[in-house]
Amino acid sequence: MLAAVRSLTIPVISAFIPLVALADANYCNSRDDLVWDAGTQTCENKLSIFTGELRVLTDPIVAKPAASGLTDSAGRYLHEIEGGFRLEFSLTNASSAPRQISLRQTPLSSDLITSNFFGPSPDLYHSGIIAEYEGTLDEYVTLPPGEKLNQVLDFGTVTQIAKTTGEVQVEIGFELRLLEQDSGRIVSIPLRTAAPYAVAVRPGAKIIIPGRPESAASSLPATPRTASVTTASSSVKISTAEYPGVPYWNYVCEDVSADMTGYTYADGTPAPCSVLGAYCGDLETTCPVSCGTCATANASWTTPWSDKSYETAACDADEISVLSQADSVKNDFCASALYCLESKTTACEDLVQRWFGGRSDDADEWATLRTGFAKICSASDYDYQCAPTDNCAITFSYDGNDYNNVEQSSVPANVRDGFIEQCQSSGCAYSATVAWVLSSDIDNKEMNLCPIGFWIQSEAASEQLSSKASVIVHELSHFVSIAGTDDMTYDTNLQLNTALTNPWYYLPNASTWDNFSEDYTTEYTWSDFSELNNVDDALSPGVLWFLTRGSVAVDEEE
Picture: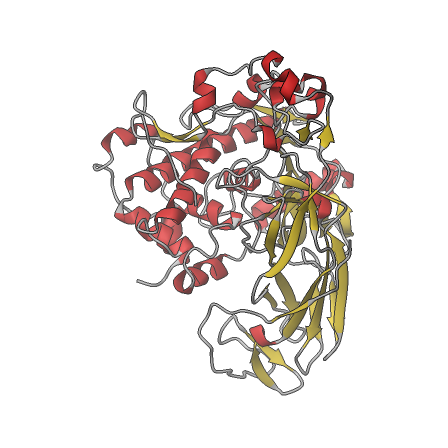
C-alpha cells in the first residue's frame, strides 16, 4: 500500500556555537566549520550550505510477525520487513557557489547500501552490511547553486523493526564530504533530520498450522526447557570467581514466546516453539531450545578474561599471526574498558565525558555503554574473513599505475603488499573500505577484513587511534546482538566537540566506542578487578594527544 507522500524539510543541525565568518583570500582557515563561498567572496558556515527533503514512500511498513532472533538493547525482539521500505531523499545546494560533494556513503548514492542512514531510533535497526570506509580520494560531483540531487532507496532488506503495530519514528543522518576547490580541503558536513517522521506499522500474515488448541492442549509435548532457562534471562553479571568484579554477558538460551513465532492455529491462537518441530529449519535462531541449537548459541559467549574462539577463514600464516596479536590487544582494551566502566575512577569519568559527553550519574547511558562492552568482551566463536571478494573497493596509485574504485581482491598480490608496506613506512593517499560486517549475523559474526584497507592499519595501539585491534572492537560493536552501533561519523574532532555540547549524542556511534577503548590506558589487567581502588588513575597519551584543553537495565546479581 502506498500512502500519500508527505515531506519533511531537513535543515543542517549544528551542535556548535555560531561563529563570525572571517575571510582569508579564498581559503577559510579560521575554523573547520567555515568554507569559502565564491559567489559572495566570504567565508560561510558549512551548516548553512545544504538543505534536504525526506519523503517516506512506504506507509504503512509491513513487519513480519515472526521474530528474527535478534533483540534490541531493551530486549525487544526485532522483525524483518515485508514488501520493501522505500525512502526518497533530495539535497539542494542553498549557497551561491557550485559545490563539489562526494556521494559515497550517503543516501544519494546508487551503490549497495553499506551504511546506516537512520539516526538514533528506538524502533528501526540497520541489519544489512555495514562497511568501514576511510581515505580522501573520493569521486566528487558538482552541484550548482540552487540545483537538487535526488535518490530513491529501498531499505526493506537492510532494516529490522522493533514493532509490528503502531508507529515508528524515521530519521535520516549522514556525513556529506565537501571538497573546497581553491584550497583542496575536504570538509565533513553532518546532515540530520530536524524531527522524526512518524510512519504506521502493521503486521504481515501469520502461518497457520494444523491442530486446535482446545483439543490438542493436553497432548502437546512438554516444552523442553529447564527451570533455569524458563526463569532466567540474559543480562550483565559480576564475576566473583577467578577475577572478582569483572562484568560479563550472562547469555541464556531460550525460545521466543508463542506470540513471536509467527505461527498460529486456525483460530488465531499463537503456536509455541514446542509444537513447531517440523519447521525448525526456519526457526533455528528463534526456537533454539526446541530445535536443539543452543550449543551453537552458547558457544558465542564466554567470559571477558577467557581466551576467545575464532576462525580465520582464507587467512595465511602471516595474517593469522597478526590477527592473533590484534585479538590479544583487543582483550587488553577490554580489561581497561571494563575496569573503567565498573570502577568509575576519575580518569574513567573524564575519558567517558570527553568522548561521550556524559558521566556515570547518567545511569541509562552508562549502563548501555557498560552492557555493550560486556558483550564485546564476552563475544566468542566469531570469524575473521581475510579474503572477501566484494564490498571492498579501493582507489589509489602505486608504481605509476592508477587503481580507481576496484575490488581489493583484484589487485595483484605484489602491488597489494608493496602498497601496504609503503603506507606503513612512509605514508600514502588512498580511499578504501577497511572492513565490513553483516550486522544481523547471529551465529558466525563474520568480520570481513579487506585485503588492503584493513592491513594498512597499525599493528598495536597508537595515538592515532587506528590499530587493527580498534577495528575489531568497532566491527564487533556493529552486530545487533552485541551493541548494535551505527556509523554516524568517523571524524574524531567532531566526536570530541559534540561531546562538549550534546552529551551522549554519539553513544550509538561505533567509531566513538573504538576511540574510547583505544584511548584508555591498557596498563590494567583482569587481576586489577580485585583491587578496584588501588590502581593508578592516569590518562593515556592518546587523550593528551587529542586534547589541548585543560538503556538497558542490568542485573548484577551474583
